[in-house]
Amino acid sequence: MSRMSRTQTTFAPPVMEARRWLAGVEFPADRPLINVSQAAPVEPPPAPLVAAMAEALADPATHLYGPVLGLPELRAELAAHWSAHYGAPVAAEQVAITAGCNQAFAATISAICGEDDEVLLPTPWYFNHKMWLDMDGVRAVPLPADDHLIPQPETARALLTPRTRAIVLVSPNNPGGAEYPAEVLRGFLDLAREAGLHLIVDETYKDFDSRSGAPHDLLADAGDTLVQLYSFSKAYRLTGHRVGAVIGPVSLLPEIEKFLDTVTICAPQLGQRAALWGLRNLGDWVAGERAEILDRRAAIAEHMPQLEAQGWRLLGLGAYFAYLEHPFAESSAQLAPRLVAEASVLALPGTMFMPVDDPRGARQFRLAFANVDRAQIATLFDRLAALDWALATPGPAK
Image (cartoon, rainbow, N blue to C red; front, side, top):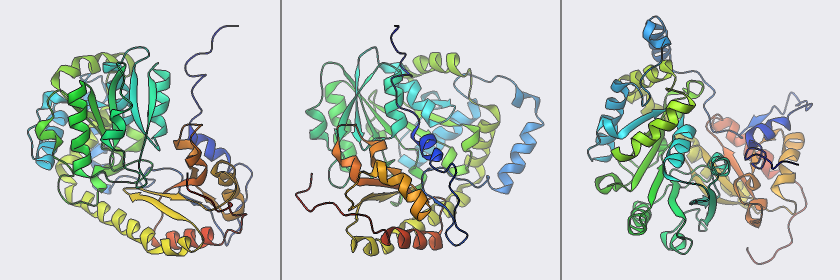
């Protein structure tokens, strides 16, 4: 028998697995489904952006291959935006445009890692990061976060080996929602530079950070160490058009270009033109979207006492996510399908964000609240508070 391929030894996409739990379930008229499983906008882009995209479709160049590293205008515009936001100079030559932020991560890992190299990945982790490392032949080394879902540099230091090539961080975090303090990020940059590693910071949700201004000052001292990743999908509702970016050292971009030329040749032209128009025209609109997300975050916090009275605990809250510890005896892996059938709630269990040998995942759920308003959040918490499942036996925390 032949050996299994890397995709065969990689777990199935968790969101697709969760959607299968909906098959054959009929939801009562007075208890419609509340879907908090996926962190992606479901509304179309704002009307002015749709109109700009329609205009772009009339341009013959939109339908052709473009430069592998992205439209020069978009690279320059994002560099200017990044420079203004972080208060440090960024050149267009440091920017690569990718087919979504997942591809930005994949391209970066392929550019810096070889067979059996190691990358530190905080747990709970973003499962697509783990999946790509598995498929690329790179070992994901779990970096346990603390009780506030913040990984710590000294914890990471103890996990470094001669095979370590990078440390990956996501802030604001998916799945945990945590916004990493500036001093923690600085500690990781110092550690990565000291050890000769890359620090990869996925900032997909930067537009929804609750802190005003730049959340860190890493870019002013980035050198060849820092690589930042970004997605246009969340800010402009362009999920189906696949536009992301890598902002990093110029020396890294030729390697990223090899990956992109082989996999997609170029990011979708229509999505790139939409992202360019958004950067130039939608600053106020994005600010309004951020205010709405922050209000939903506040609603989660306001309703948490209702769940805390039932033994739940809020571990992390921010961007699109609330990450909770439940009080029940069964694992979240078994409880998540029951939530669909018994409470009309689709949420992802913590087991999807943890190594199989980490027991914490069995006690956790992620709620992605970007597509539920205040009224739905109130209903969601009523349903969770009403669950009468068997409770776990009290004991020391693990």
